[in-house]
Amino acid sequence: MCLGAIYWARPKVVYFANNRQDAADIGFDDSMIYDEMNASLEERKIPIISLGRENALKVFHLWKHKDDKTLY
Image (tube, rainbow, N blue to C red; front, side, top):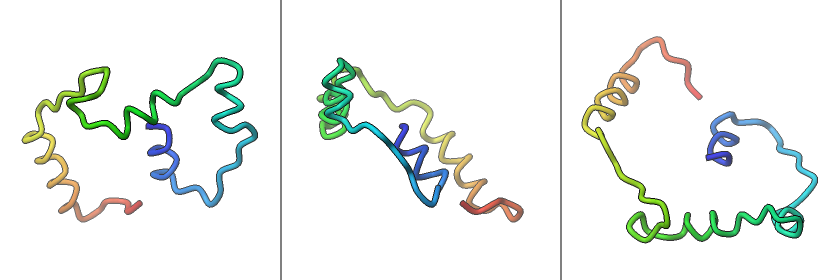
């Protein structure tokens, strides 16, 4: 989600100081998140369940055909 937010914001550059291993070394190990991203939805530790897709697609359709939207 955080990486998605970064890319959707379209910054010209992203700066960082510490890497994944630095964070893991002090107890902020997020390797499980990367493992989960590579697993199918059915195999993930926390259930990921789609709800209301048909209604959500209607909203996307409205956005796609909106004349005065700001393109990102």
